[in-house]
Length: 515
Image (cartoon, rainbow, N blue to C red; front, top):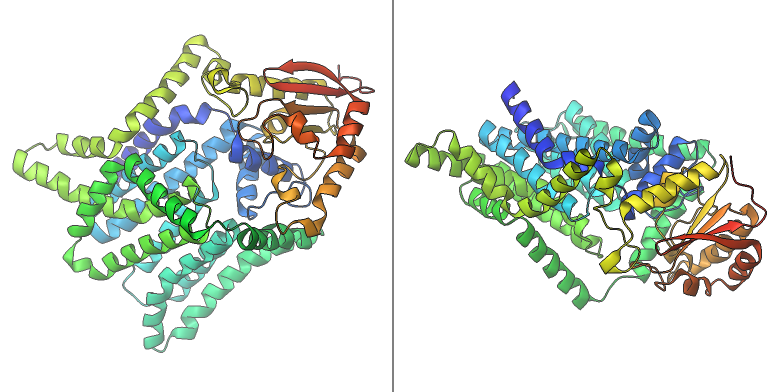
């Protein structure tokens, strides 16, 4: 890799992602950002802020918040850095197989593909970091030599990190089996195996030690192991629904990334003949990533991010062949690369245009709020939705009128307002779905939820009267009827102090605002 390759990948990434760094966090990223901010403040996942994801995603969000403070730009920039890391990992992996041109095209294809997912709202998920880690594992796997101690230890570390992002991701370690088998055939099996086991144990042990130190190992097991198992066994969708969702997901990927799919097909057809073993391994990786999508059974679109690295390796091979063909037959030396990039990115242009226009509008106004006003949220009617600028403004206002240690209840809403206000929820439960989901009743979480709120007496309670993605009713007051004791207590203890769009703000009657 030379400076031209580095500059190209960074320039492409900035061209695609720069305006995306200045949007807000909502939905799943707001959950991770909220829990990450709690971790940065010394609180513990699951015990103090509960979500069903494995712990690595919370530590990932906690790191930039701990370094730069509570900032959506910080966590979005960190996600961009992970994406850029994935591009460089793909450069080395595809370059090892098909040369530097294939590597450069593969890294570019990844940036284009991930950008398309980001513009559809699927960013900052565990799958993003998993894609980077999987690519590095694949880079280790395609080496021709038997597995040695250093690569084994590195592979164990990587697989341990993948396990901490999601339990099924441990299966990525299967990609190293051919090199391990080669070591076994040479009577080097144990020296090749134990460093990998050590690396995996080291990562898992450090995570377990963190939770044990805080007296929360049971919370980790309950939140990251037992709860996902219950979700899988009690809330698995019917086979026909899963088959339809699988087909729908594949079709969506095809429509989002048509140019990359075409180049990947060309790459699979014209794979370097000298790299038969590598081609098999890349195809196995693609099949393994599809299996991981299916194993999770829910088919959210961000699951498909896992398939992008092997797909982009094939696309890099195809793009290299196409660029070579153009240069050879039409003598377009400088234009060939641009034409191939245009084929990759054509489907992303309309979405990219919206984000750039929104960003530049804010620049012209000299106010980031003008950019955020272009972004919708899940609150309010679709035709006049609550804007991200209103959400961020409300959160910051609540932070200014409350004190450190005060809590704010965002009832049946994502915790974006808690993140922007810098105030924790009174209960560790962020969403309502886990309180009485099938199989979860045994925990008594619904009673705990109401009891904790009444004990901690939040300064403010926020209730959305028109939520387009609620757990129960779109009207939060209607949902509140499912918690009769809590509802009675709220109406006795709080009074309506204002309304911002569809969100009603209730202040505790005896609460004195911070000056």
